[in-house]
Length: 225
Image (cartoon, rainbow, N blue to C red; front, side, top):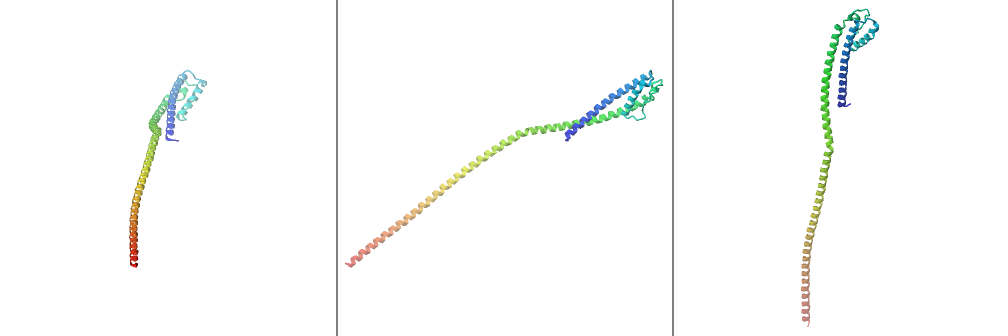
C-alpha cells in the first residue's frame, strides 16, 4: 500500500473516531437525561417491574463507559426517595466520572484532530506533488514530439551535409582526373616531340651517310677509268 493510500486510511479512521466521539457525547447526554427521568420516577414509583429494565440499561451504559464493576444499580423498590431507589448517590459518584471521561475524550479528540489536520496537510502536499508530476507527465508527449522534430531536422541536415560532401568529393576527383589527364597529355606530347627530333636526326644521319656512300662510289669509278 502506498503512503498516499495509508494517509487516506488514517484520515478515514480519525474521521470515524471523531464521529464515534460525537455519538458517545450524545449518548452521555441521553444517559444524563435518563438519570434525571429515573430520579423523577423514583419519587412516585416503587415497583421493580418499572425500574428493572432501565437499571439493566444503565448498568450496560456504565460498563461501556468503563466506570468499574462496583457501579451497579441495585434498585430498591421499597425506597421512598431517588437515592434510596437507585441505591447510590449517583450525582456525587457518576457526575465526576462522566466529567473526567468527557475531558479525556475531549483531549483524545483534540489530539486526533491535530493528527487529522497534520495528515490533511500532508495529503494536500502529496496531492500537490502528484498534480505537479501529472502535469509534467502530461507535458512529456509534447516535449518528446519537439525532440523528435529536432532529431528529424538534425538527420536531414546530416544527410544534406553528407550529400554535399559526396558531391564535392566527386568534383575534386574529376578535377584531379582532368589535371592528371592534362599532365599525361603534356608528357606524351613532349615525348612525341623528342621522338620526332630523334627521328629527324636519324633521317638526317642516314641521308648524310647515303651521300657519303654515293660520293665514294663515284670517286672509285673515276679512279678505275
